[in-house]
Image (cartoon, rainbow, N blue to C red):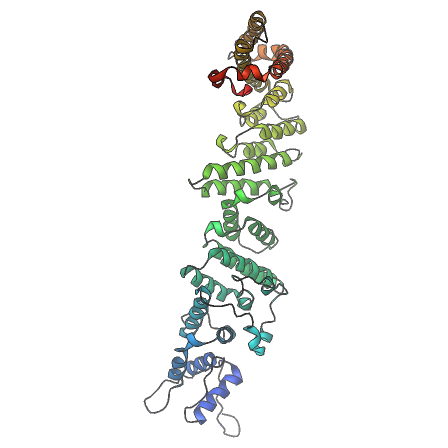
Length: 500
C-alpha cells in the first residue's frame, strides 16, 4: 500500500518478466482466449503454473490449454523444437527437477535425432532469425561445412548449457544412439564452449563431459581426442582429482591406439623429469586393468612396443631415478614383448648415463630382460658391455653360445648332404664349440662370483673367435649350389630353417 492508498502487487521472479505478465494479462482480458504457438507455449505454461491458474470449472484453464498444445509436439518442425528448447533453458528450468514440458521437448528432440528417417534440416536454424541471433555463443567451428549426415545437428545444440547437455546425452544413451557420434559431439561441444567460458565454467564443462564419456562404449572413444582433453584438463587448476582419474582410466583403456608423441607429456610443476613418467605408469596400469580376454595379446604387444619406444626416449634423462626406471621396465609381463632388443637398448642407454648406481639396482633393472628373446647381436653386445653386472654379462654369454650351438647343428646337417666341409674339420670345429660350451657352463656355478669376474675377459675373447667361425659358416652356406639342395628330394624337409 503506497501513500495514495493504491494497492501494489509485486511478483518476484515472474517467468519471462514483463513479457510473460503481458501474455497472462491478455489471456485474462480476452475471456480465456489466446494464441498458443511453439514459441510461446513454454512461457505460458510456466507463467500459468506460477500464477496457479488451475481450472475451477467456470473459466478456461491456461494450464490445460498449454498441455493440450504440447500434445501436438510430434508435428512441430525441427526449428520450432529448438525454439521451445531454448525457452526452457532461458526460463531456468532445472534438468534435475521434474518438469513435464521440459521432458516432452527433450524427448521429442532426441527422438528426432535417433529416428533413421529424419532428414537433416540444414536450414532449420535460419528459419527463425530471433533464435539464430540468440545462439551467438557458437564458435566459428562449422559442422555443416563437412556435409556429414551424422553431425548435421551438432551446431544446432551448441547453445545448450552443460546441465541440459548432460540430460540430452543420457537420453541418447538410453535410446541406443550411436556412441561414436555422441563422442564426436561432446568433443565439439567442449571446444566450442571453451571459447567464451570462464575458468570456473571450463572446470564444470570438463567434469560433466568426462563423466558422460565414461558412460559410453570404450571402443567409441578416440585416443587422440582423449589426450587432447587431458592436456586441457591439466591446465585447469580447479578441476577435481576424481575427474582426472576417470579421464586417465579412459585413456588407459585405449592406450594401444596411442603413439609415442602422446606419452611425451611435460611433468607437473616443480618436477625435473623430462616427461611425466608417473602418468605413463598410471596409464599402463589402467590399460592392464581394462584389458579384456578378447584379442588381449595383440593389444598388449602394441602397448609393449609403445612402452619400449618410450623407455628409449626417457632413458637418457639424468633425473630419472633407478627405482622409477625399474618400475617402468618391469611394468608389463614378459608376454607383452616378442623381442627384448629395444628393452635392452633402453637399459643400455640408462646404464651408460647413470654410471654411479649400485650393483643391486642394476640387477633389479636387468631382471626385466629375457635372454631367449634377445637377438645374437644384442647378446654379443651384452657379453662385452662392462656397464652391465658380471652375472648378467655371463648369462648373456651363455645364451649366445646356446644359439651358436644351434647354428653348428644346422651346419652339421649341411655338411652331411653337401660335403662342402670335410668330416675331420666338422669334428674339430664341433669339439671347439663343445669346449667353449663346457667352459661357459663350468663357470656358471653358484657361489663363484669372483672367479666369474676374473674369467669374463677370456670368455669375451672366445665370443670374438666364435663370431669369426659363425661368419665362416654363413659363407659356406651361401656357396652351396642350389642344384645340390634340390637333388635331395623329399629329404629336403629335414633341412633346418636356416637353409630353407
